[in-house]
Structures are given as C-alpha cells and as structure tokens.
Amino acid sequence: MSSWPELEPMPNRLVNYGVTDNGIAIIELSSDSNGEPLEGDSKPVNTYTHGMMCDIDKAVVKARFDDNVSVILITGAGEGFFSAGASIAMLNSVTPGFKYNFCLHANETLSRLEQTSKLVIAALNGHAVGGGLEIAMAADIRIARKDAGKCGLPEINLGVLAGTGGTARLTRLIGKAKALEYMVSGELMAFEKAEELNLINHVWDGSAEQFRQDVLDWAGQYTLPYKATMAVGNIKRSCQSGPEMPFEYHLALERELQAALFNSKDAKEGIAAYVERRTPRFEGK
Image 1 (cartoon, one colour):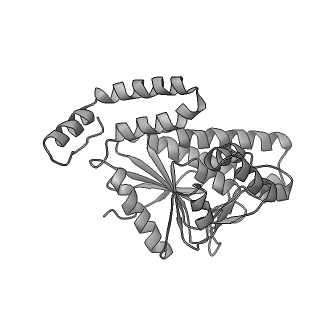
Image 2: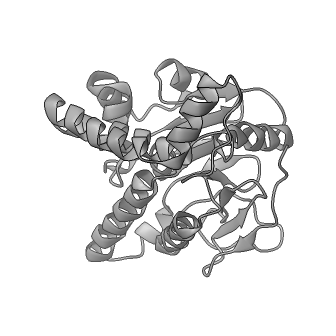
Image 3: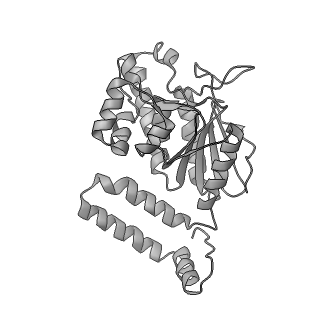
C-alpha cells in the first residue's frame, strides 16, 4: 500500500505536485474561490485561472518526462470541491481577447493531459462543475466520492457554453442527446447519476481521507511491475485516436501499436509468464 507523498507547490502555487514511491504522480488543484493561492483559513474551492492552467501544464509535462511515473492522479485540495471551474471574477475582469486565449491554452493543456501515454485518473473528492468537470473529462478514468458533490456544465446560466472541451468531451462520453440536454438546462447531476451515464467510472463510499487512500491504492494496480505500461499507453492511444478516424484506419492503427508491443521486452515477459504459469513482472520496456 502506497502513502500520500509530500507535495510541493508549482510556480504559481495553484497546483501541488508529488510522486509516490510506486510511481503515481499526484496533481492537486489548490485555490480559493477567486482562483488565488490558499492563504490562512481560505477554503479550497479550486477554481482555475490562467495561472492554474500554467501550473497544471507544467505538472503534466513533469510527469510525462519522469520515467519513474506510470500513473497520473489528479484531484482537488480539501473535501468540498474537485474544482468549481473557471474563476468568474477573472473572466469578469479581462478582455475578450484574453478570454479566447485563456480557452485556447486550457484546450492545449487538457489535450496534453489526455494525450500523454500514461494512465490519468481523476479523483473527484467533491463538486466538479463547469471547468472542473472539463478537467476531469480529460482524464481516462473518473472516480468520485459518494455524496461528496455533484457534477455538470452549467455555463448556460452565464450565457456561454463550456468552452474548454466541455461540449466536445461530454458529447463523446454520454452521447449527443443527453449531453445537449444537460448543457442547455444547466442541470447538475449527482455522482451516482453520472455513473449511470458512464461519465464516472466508479462511486465509492467513505470519508474524504479514506477516499484519497482508496484511490491511491486502486491506482497502484496500474503501476510497474503489475501492468505493462507500454501496453497501457498503446491501448490509450488506440482508444483516444481511433474513434476519430474511419474504422479501417483504426484497425490499421491498432495493428501498428500491437506490432510495436510485440517487439517489447514486456510482451516477451507476459507471454513467457503465461506459458510458465507464473505472475509476470513488467519493466516498462
């Protein structure tokens, strides 16, 4: 069982980062309701600004280049919020041009998170609304704490849409009809309902502290030596890129990814272990 690592703040102090002994990189969103660094008794609402997106970007790149990292786990500080989304105070104070580039940079950051070859798990410790859900939807797997909050894209109530990947990802995850209904109504859904719609993979009971440890322990199954991390990365590549291309092209992509794995040391180990009736020990090579 791994333990929560010592987390260090990224440059803007809006994200904390650390790596467990077994190779799980923790990205913890951490800000007040205005998107400023937590000070004194300020409550973690984990709203994001351009500064937080810059911190997320740096953390993702750091995890991507760390050969000791197999899994990225993204969560929110505190117990009430994974993230309340973009800072409305920030959006109210900047120019339309800044808002456009803010959305563009957020798109690029979340695409970087989505496209990294390492498995990304979002641990929804509390409400994930608006841009908070947009961050979570860029993860590969979403796990939520029961009765800890709700999720949804209520941007319609501000007269705008979910513009950092929300309309695109929610449609792909739960289907056009349901996604459109939730976005035009602005309705928030309980985590259990989101699980029924396949937006969330699992909803777990327990305290905030227990949830954090349970997610960390569960993520450990995807680290070395238990899982062939190259295979995980190639499965992710096929699932992320394949549905956006014609079926025959997806099959061709799948074959190329498989061919690369057949030449890996881990594939040789996995096949040999199966024949020898033993548990494989993967090295990520």
